[in-house]
Amino acid sequence: MKTSITNIALALVVLMILLSGSVFTVSQTKKALVFQFGEVVETYDTPGLKFKIPFVQSVLYFDRRLLDYNLPVIEVTAEDQKRIVVDLYARYSIEDVLLFYKTVNDVAGAENRLSTIVSASMRRVIGQVPLSQMLSPERAKIMRKIREEVFESAKSFGINVKDVRIIRADLPKENSEAIFKRMESERVQEAKQFRAEGKENAIAIRSQAERERTIILAEAERKAQVLRGQGDAESSKIYAQAFNKDKEFFSFYRSMNAYSEALTPEGTTFILSPTSEFFDFFGTKSK
Image (cartoon, rainbow, N blue to C red; front, side, top):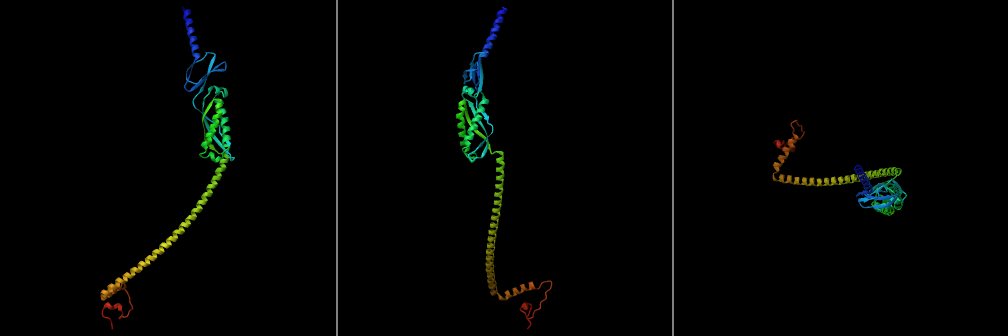
């Protein structure tokens, strides 16, 4: 009885081991290859529960998601012989897992091949355009052409390249320093020119303003003279009309004003003839 129970337990353990070794799961994010004696015997592209021969077959998983790869910095020469340092990245996925394994083996091998392909494509495409296009909206077309070339080359090892983008594009350090110095010198020259032009414009504006000021003052003085003349004429006219209305009173009024201005409280000394018209209203003239 005890021997039978032991045999059954051993059989169950062996069965569980065989079952665990013959069943495996491919997740939504993976693809799998089944190997037997080092050779691929089965490929699984769809998720789910799969079976294999225990202890004889093994499983190797590959990522089916979109992968990012930051490539090493590449220095290329444009058509106008100007060098540029390019930092870029690629996004790709494993399409044909069996071809991928046979040609590049793993992700590290794939990225190594991608780096070579992208570098060669960058040198070829950018070598046909001037640097100015790389720094303009034309860069999108250039990158599209590079992506198309890389896409075609990458298909040969089971990879689908979704995108290739430039993160940063700069001039080499020694070129940048020389360009910055030249730009600084150009800006200094422009600043000097702007200041000189500003001074010249300021002198012209001041001269024009002074000229207009002189004209305005002359015109104002002329109008003032005309108005004063008209005022004096009107004043004389009014005085004449008033004088003609009452000559004796007007003469008396003018004499009183003259006395008020001439005979001040401090004391005034006049040397005049007693028969002078100035004394007409002081009494009877001396004869």
